[in-house]
Image (cartoon, rainbow, N blue to C red):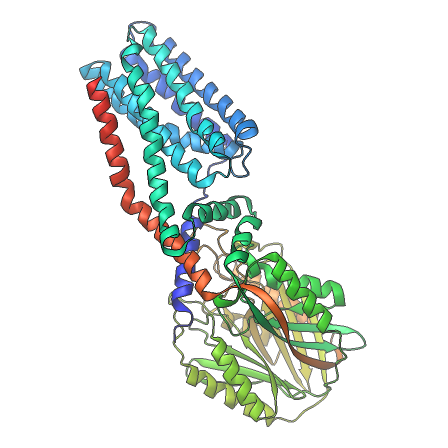
Length: 601
């Protein structure tokens, strides 16, 4: 069963593309690299210098470096004033520019040694035009500054550097007047070619979806590079759609609130800090602040079709949940925890009064998003048995295959068997303990979001069951079984581990997925030790409790519907693929025009 497959695949493509864009060298590394290239560039000029070649070459290289550094400082601090193009990134752009220009110059130096200095001059000029093209493309797609400021940033460094070359040529009796036509015309050709390239990519969005590709790209860049979410979320709000959000809520109270399980049918995506990606952690934090107890936000049964559009929508959901859950818990009996499996499809269930806490897992096979349709089916089946139900997708196993192989009918069958098994069990008073840990060893980059890991222990008779909720996006296959085994050895009769599916960990690392599922970049022994520590801490504060259940609706939440999110994610991928196809024809024609212009000089 492929659940929301094409949408998830297109989102994964977008995340992989963007997460690979920002592996940039440090400021010090960039400065050293530019200095080295400029010095070597200057020294390469001595192949046709009539005298004092080493001295003049060092002087040229040092001056090129100083001019580049100084201009980039002014561009970043005064001209552009762009959130992305701080000094480090401005210098990285110059570094890549110098690498390209350096290639032209080194080839020119070699040719000049054999055929004369004319080749050094002409290929240096060709590199100058290529430099302007590169800077035009980058600043057009990335910078949010005005057109005038971008043009200054595009032209200032190349023109300043080419004037230094012209002065050097003049000192070597090469008449710069011969190359004035190229110096005047080539920037127009370079800028126009780059803008044609950008226009062709922009039209993909305008023609197919009435969405300017470049505007979307800039919003994504602002988010990925500077973590600004407002520009992209503003766009998502405009194209989103309003829908009512269902919330299932289960809490445990002693003399005061003890723990809560909150399951809003909002998908925690699409990525990083955009939309509801951070909802599990901020909802947990806000609820705990309001009620002074542990809370967890495991994943319900849904996919990317219900990503909230913005932080504003997140807070609307949170405020409604906090306001709707101050009721008194009254369910004072619970059954033991039970499991049912059919092949690789597993379900677990525990009843609190007439409320079933039911979860699905397909571990060790992939347990990814499960469809809303399954949730409706399970609720109907539970209703036939006189039960309310909180349904959880454990989301706790990820293999190389993203396809969920179980059919809805198999999942329904296992759920019904599990509910019937639970309802046949005797009921007893119960105790609950809870604890949350935030291990310092694990971060967003290793796959753990700010919600940390929460353990809720339920003791019914002699059975101690621990539910562990990890604020991460899925889990490597096989790790769940290791965790359950360790918890069994620690004295817990039964256990299950869930992830929140938070996409706060997505697009923060360079890699195949753009994120690490729980356990992929973590030491398993340390992770399991921390989980066991949380479970034991929860067991240490067991006390008699009552349960409370409520299902309610948060109205008119702006979501990025499946159609909208699909358009955006597909547009990103289409734009990048289109760029790969047209880059050679567009800039190949530009190169031929520039070469023709040089030949005619």
